[in-house]
Length: 191
Image 1: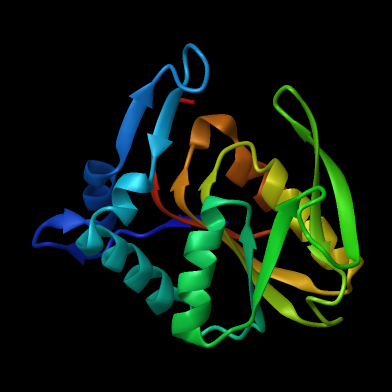
Image 2: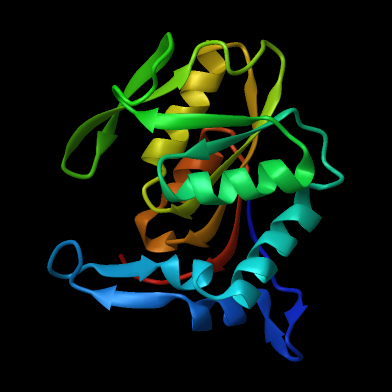
């Protein structure tokens, strides 16, 4: 099940409306026809970043889980902030060849090819639950790969959380069909 945050922020603006107003859209990047949703504007605005983090902490502070899994690269910013505030260990999911220790890896499909995602094999214990975080849910491929790595290690995904969901790309649907609950703070139509 995919959910969005809608509680009030700044008077009558919902979290979704507020964040959508703070996220910059860059047309035709990285390819013609793409509307890139740039969350760097949230990091540049302490009030917007604080609201983003506060909503995520509030959502997960009463949930039972063991670790936070952050996806390369903007997910690292979210994950490290949440890890610190919630006193949870952080797992890094990185592109192939970026982690120095022994790793588990999985190859997954991208829109135009394949990629490999890795995590340290000793970064999670069997039976643990992990909250996965990334900046957005697009096709869902990277989050599905992270979940597969967790399952290889005997762990499981609590939920896949993102700032943005792009529902037209059906990533949240793919994750939900795989049994992974999703959560986002806002949605943008289009690619």
